[in-house]
Image (cartoon, rainbow, N blue to C red; front, side):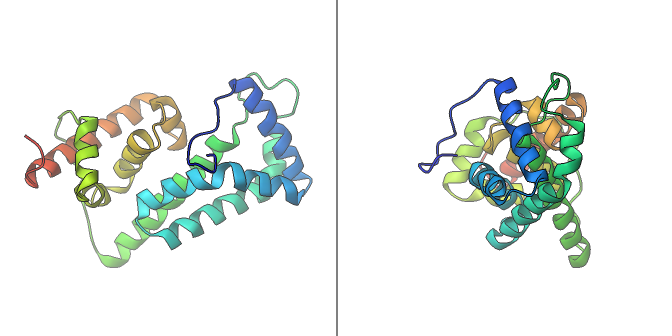
Length: 205
């Protein structure tokens, strides 16, 4: 994200992958400037994901810090799997790698908090479409945030990555370490659960 909050101009995947691989090599060599570059480039988007999943700014900050530290620790392994040359298959995308880590960390923390509180929210199996306008309207009056926070952790992640971060299904699936079919099934259940919740709140027809 730029300072104005707008996304950086899109770049060709191969160019991004080359840049990320080179950046990972600098991390593996323990270059502090490389770590600062990663934080500047990715921290804002990662914090958004973590905050929208946990609803806690301090928790989100901890999650992002842990994800960045994991990248620092695992950079040598990433470089070994993605050499600077010959990376057409399995290209390295630091943003995608960090999204996976942040999503998994947020899910783990939500599950741990739920176990400690004894709370439980069942998965919804109903099938129903969810319009973008429904989330937008609910967000204006604060309803959407509360209803999304009540979803099971993985459903919440699917909604956040798809509707708030606007990731294509393939990228969101990768962030959750799911194949595309499994992710779309999860997103379908999440949409159905939200549709049902909005209806119960009187916010949907």
